[in-house]
Amino acid sequence: MPGAGADEAGVGSVGPRLLESLLAALDRAEVHERPFAHVILRGAIPPDLFAELRALLPATEVYLPDNPKKYGRPDGSVARVLLPLDGQGLSSLPERSRSAWGGVAAALASPELKERVFRLLARDLSRRFRVPPGRFDAIEAHPRPSLVRDFPGYWIEPHPDTRAKVVTLQLYLPSAGSPADLGTSFYRLRPWRFPRTGRFLEEFRRAPFEPGSGYAFAVGPFSWHGVERIREGSGPRDSILLFYFRDPGRRS
Image 1 (spheres, helix red, strand yellow):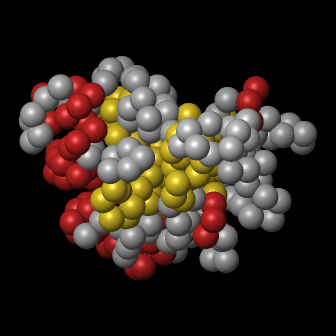
Image 2 (cartoon, one colour):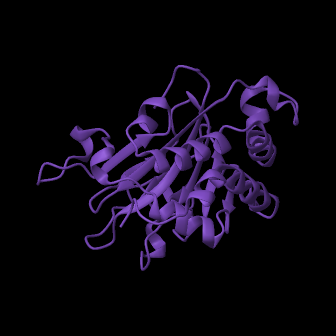
C-alpha cells in the first residue's frame, strides 16, 4: 500500500540517487529524431529506488482532480489526478514522504538534468528557438514536476502540446502486473499515399510502461502524442511528469 516501507536513511538520499540514475539513463538512451525529437529511457530508476518510490506514493485522496469536465467518470470521480511537487503539494504529505518527493523535485529541477535532456533534443530545440546547438542556457525553461495517477477510462487524443511548454519528460511507476502497453504513444503524419481513413495521424512508437522507464521530447508543431484509453482492470497508471515551461509562473 502506498505510504509504507522505505527506511529513513534511504528517504534522505532519494534525490541524489534519482539524479545519478537519470543522468546515466540519458547517456545510454534511445535517441530518435523522427517523427520529432524524442528519447526513450529504460532503467532510469534502479529497482531499489523504484520500490522505495512506489511505497511512498501518496493516497489518491491527496491528489487534485485534473480537468473534471473532460475526465469525469460516471461515479463522480475523475480519470486523472495529479499532485504538483511544489511547496503547496509537498506540504500535504507526511514528513517522510515530503522529504522523499521533495528530493525528487530537486533532482528534476537540477541544471545538470536540463542540460543533458536538452542536449539530446538539440535538433528540434535549436530550430524552434533559433539558438545554436549547445546554447540551451539561452532558452528560458522552468521545471514543473508532478505526480500523476490515471485510472481506467483515461485517454488523451493526439496533440502537439501548448507552445508554453519547451520539453516534456515522464517516468513510469507501474504496479506489479501492469500492462506494458499503457505508455504514451508518439504519432506521425500519414504519408499522402496512405488510403484515406479519416485520421491524418498514425502511431509511430509507444513508450513501454515498464518500471523505471520513460521518455522525453521537445515540444513543437509536430510533437503529436497521446494516450490510448486505459481499459478497465488496467489501472492505475502512476508516473512522475515533468514539464519545462517558458513562463516561470506557469504550472499547467
